[in-house]
Amino acid sequence: MHLASVVNQDNDLPPLPSGKSAVDVLTDFTKYLFMCAESYIREHHPTLAWSSIEDSVEYIFTHPNAWQTVQDQLYRQAIERAGLIPSTPEGRSRVYVITDGEASLHFCVANLLNLETPNQSTPQGVVIIDAGGATIDLSMFSMTFNPISYKEVAPAECMWLSSTA
Image 1 (tube, rainbow, N blue to C red):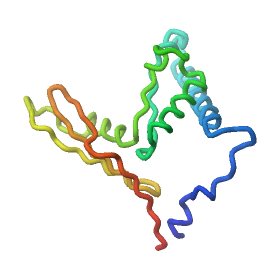
Image 2 (tube, rainbow, N blue to C red):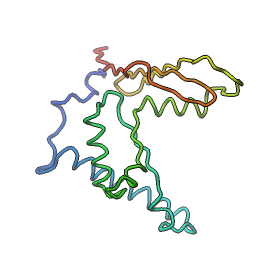
Image 3 (tube, one colour):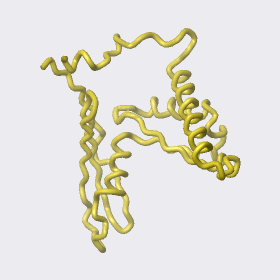
C-alpha cells in the first residue's frame, strides 16, 4: 500500500453536511466528546457531585502545529458554542488551546527531563519531533530553569509525507 493513498487530500474529503460550517461540525464533535467524558466520570466516580465541579473544569485542547491565529480563534469559538464554558472572560479563562508541539513539550518536561539540576541558569534547547501519521512536525523551544519557563524559538514546521514506496 502506498502511503500517499492513505493520506487524505483536500479534494478527497466529502463535503460538509448541508448548512453546516466547519465550526458547526467542530462544535458538534466537541459537544459529543464532552458528553462522553462527563458520562464516563459520572459512571466511574458515582460519589462525585458533578454540580460541584462543572463550573470550574478547565479544558486543554490541542491543535496541529500548522494552525494559525484564525484557526485557533475558530476552535475557541466552537468550544464556547459547544456549551463547555459560558461566554464570559471567566469562562474563556478556563480554556487552554495549545499546539501539538507544546503538548509534547509539556509531556517531556513532566516525564522525561531531569529538572533537578540546581541553579541552572543557562537556557537549554528542546527540539520536539512528532513523526506520526502522515506528517512530521518539528517544534523548537528554549527552556530556562528556576523558575521553569519556555518559549518557542522557531515557528513550528509541519511536513507532509508523500511516499510512493
